[in-house]
Image (cartoon, one colour):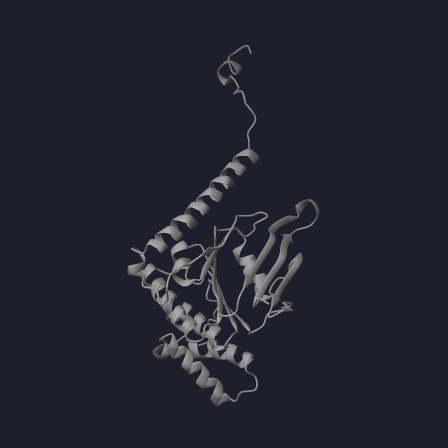
Amino acid sequence: MAYLELNNICKTYGQGANEMEVLSNINLKIEEGEFVAIVGFTGSGKTTLVNLINGLLAPTSGAVLFKGAPVVDTSHERGVIFQNYSLLPWLTVEQNVLMAVKEAFPEKNKKELKTIVADYVEMVSLTPAMHKRPKELSGGMRQRVAVARALAMKPEMIIMDEPLGALDALTRGNLQDEILNIWGKDKRTALLITNDVDEGIYMADRIIPLRPGPNATLGPEFKIDLERPRDKTAMNDNANFKKTRNAIIEYLMDIGNERKTEAKEAYILPDLVPKDFVNQFKFGN
């Protein structure tokens, strides 16, 4: 039994003539301790897929199974790191993380909860900013808070919905390393949604492209044959990295070109004959 299973998932929005199938026939299995990346174009349905896995949405048909049981609601067993931080602006760093920890561990006393919060805030190097509010933090620091909050609940699976997409290259690279260091300590199952092929190769065990919607579905998987821990500089000269990267990019370019061709065929304009405005407005006509 896989740790996470998506069986023949379809998701539609709207009704009747306005009904649109966003995801179609999605099948995926992720084993315990595995790090999987799904890469795709903007608007291909990646966030919808995350919301189905996390229980924020229900599939129109098919089933999402976590440890063999149907996913019917959200749970701290599946921690989500969102792209837009989702921090409460009136709470400090400590309070934002504490709120999540209290929900995950209602049986623990105040001292135990504060210890957990302090440990995870320290893990993302934000102890000096413990009592600052989000408006006092940079974008990278806010995302660190979001990472700490998700991990402090000690989820059995980490789900990341393009968590680093809005960051500058240096901050993004640093957070990639921090997430990998944290993941490497106990190998919790991880799913990364990204539109960055290099990020997926650097972080994941395998990459699966999401073909663009409507009717988006998963493409073939690409296994990442690179030893851990990975060195970004050394990867650029690694033959396996180059081969895998080229294969994924070529596949994405091919389906991107298919999408353009389909769009052109769907919107073919009729032959039009321009009016003869010069003669039309001559006196006597």
